[in-house]
Image (cartoon, rainbow, N blue to C red):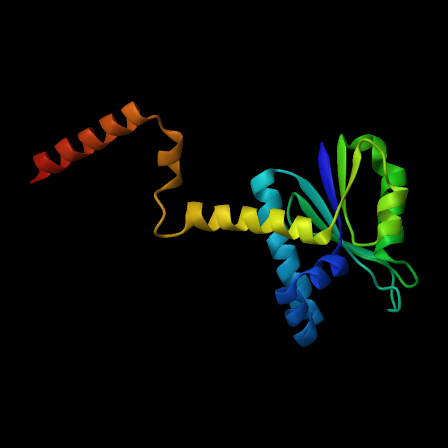
Length: 172
């Protein structure tokens, strides 16, 4: 099993559109990032944990399961996203075949180097997510062909269309 560990604010700051949203509302920027990652993970069938630090904030750490594949962690007072990610890796490394760590913190990337732990820059991760979102929008947009037709071989699809035409003619 694979998992993506995301330093949420690093990714938000790597995207001009998310940064603009952040200047208006922290919640809206977080929600948009979570929505994007949920779509990406659904398409790729991979788990993700998005971590938002509350380093200067108050309160205890809390975790929300936003989908079967995606969880969001808000760290407790005095704990950074990086420290949460390092702790998660130390505790759960053996549970995953690959762990992708999305962070812009070079020190974080250097401390997690291992054959199963892959540091990815937020900009590269955003490119992957955008590719997934583009695929989803093209595949499921109202103008797109129904997705099931892409899964049926040409001969079978031709027979289905011919059968539909003959039924339509019989009704007329």
